[in-house]
Image (cartoon, rainbow, N blue to C red; front, side):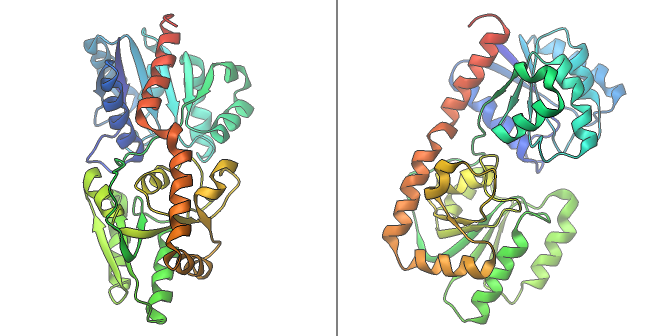
Length: 337
């Protein structure tokens, strides 16, 4: 079996879905599924013909589209591919619930052309079913994995608090910086580490943050490789990830931090699975977060209990299982299962 993985972005471009696609490709290879990553620079309707040529050249059995990505921009080539491709198409729709209405409406073409549509969480799937009820039967869920490797050994710095994620507005970084201000103001002996990559369109935002926080106890660990990120995460005693909208299983950065044995303080939200309640601690603002962090720093047994619960929750998020779940979908599409 050979799969053409279609994506608008691949590393080193800053795109979580692009990173996810490469990790999926590596996991498929581990279970002896051949793949080819198909990408290009432009994704307008005219570029569909180049895309179609590449797909045919790949000699793949299945075409698997990852949508959306940063690289697609507003291009419609992936949508046209779903409709016109002569090979069976599977589409993974990421962040569907949180997409704007124009993007959601465009997904009608994926709902028509795809044999199976994969979602990474129940909230996205349910939102899709409400809009495209006729395609509900062809949808399924395969949970997202971490784009960052999970390492076994901890190198815990007892005073370090970290943040991890793509550096752009509305990702919770402003709250993390407010936490650093509280720590600085109170002369607390904690250091803070922002680990991430600035999106190309947000370099100015990143530079402004660096200037504004020059007097704060923040280290900026940017543009690291996945392995370097994992090592950096493992140095932290605690992580503060104040997600707008709250923690959920669609947060790859949350999976990365939890998988590397770091206890997480985050915001709660309606999409957080009940079984994750004991795998993290919750705070609604930086002031509350600091109180929770101090409690964790002073109680290693409590911190270890959170890490142990997190490891239980992450069993279904490991890449070998994700790869096998994809194989089940591909077998079904090809009539092999």
